[in-house]
Image 1 (cartoon, rainbow over the protein chains, first blue to last red):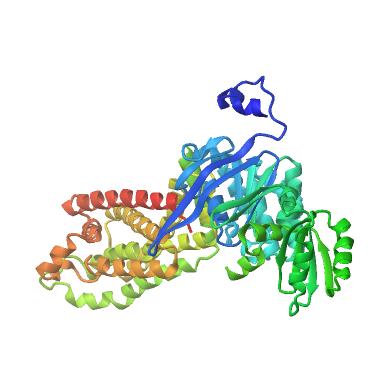
Image 2: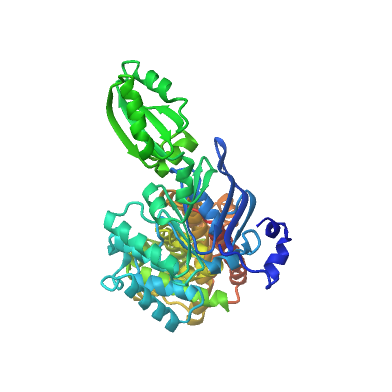
Length: 346
Length: 253
């Protein structure tokens, strides 16, 4: 790996003899990406130096609360907005110089979708296909294929304004993949959908991934990032606070979390802290409203020992839970706030 | 050519939208027909007064109304753009390689077609009432009106892309449209106006269109006002088309 990275980049790119790394080529690569907006109150830095790498074949999740800079970053990557600073390549093309080439390679499904409400789903699909250069026969075939695949036969020839939220979302996805893009951007694909429609979109994303499409999605749902993505980046206040696979990120939260419910009126909290602070398996102790949270390695093994120790000291324990860390714990640890709270306030 | 192909695709899509909501066709018609039926008869008594152009009341008033339709009716064409900004359609298109000029030209094509249908209806009503245009002049006038409509529609698109909401567009268009109309000589010939008003009207491109439209209807295509109007409105149509295209390129909701 070290020797490879020391080679001049051009050698790797042009010399066919150099084997491609197993992980696949980078479809998105940004360095120091920034975007500032000027408003009457002054300048707002929406994106403040984002470095991202998304490789071919990944479902990459971009997780963060509302207003964190997710959508702005995505709008830069999809050519809708120029960056204020930094560099970015998408599908191998520079975003500043080769907008047209980038546009041919990518598909984009925005939050609002963008189907014309006064046309039918099929008419929307045909227009999309023709715009990417298909002739009308090709466009008709591809539209029929997608209508069958996404189960849209029942409503494909009705006007889009009559669609339910879930039906519309299926059409939006179909529009995004009509021209078989190499890289698909999904901006909050399941926001506002009922659980069934969400599951359906997730299945479709997995199916597209299985066919080799690379997917970049933004979300503020942790379960979506956790269950759907191979790799993710957490963004807050315009900066990436963590990047990696969901498992790696969760491992940053030193193992497991033991939550102890204690009598917070007494000195129990202080005594437990005193007892456990110096144990080798305890990585961190954080007080909570109900008592304490212990960040430990191998929670199942150490839990009995914790209980024995506290029992020997006659400390009354009201409740005990052992939990694996969630992405929300990662977010909490990195930003000092819960993702749920952040979304609630936004 | 890609621009032509894309324009045709965008035209078909926009045509579907307008075809399914024909109420706009009649809203645009309502005002000029009202003027023709309820205002033109008042002019009859002015015919022959000093300063009133030669020709019958309907031959003077109908061409003015046609220009008025270009200003008023087409001026609100930008509402279609707002709808498509709202639905996210324009944003979706801006991620595709579709030509931005074609996005404007496709929509423009439909709005001009609507405008022409309205013109035909207006001329039909006018003929029943006593409008007697020179046929060749009327054909040339149609061309001049297309240029006027293009300029007004693209102006409206650009404002729509600038304000991005109905109230901003309505307010700004109203602000522009009423003085344009009053200073065009549509309602009463500018020959009645005091000199200051006439001088201000010289800055109004549609005043030239109204002058030329009367000359064309009267069968004087060689009149100097005709060449002037074609040049002024042609240039204006080109400038506004580029302005609207540039706004489309940068449009962000």
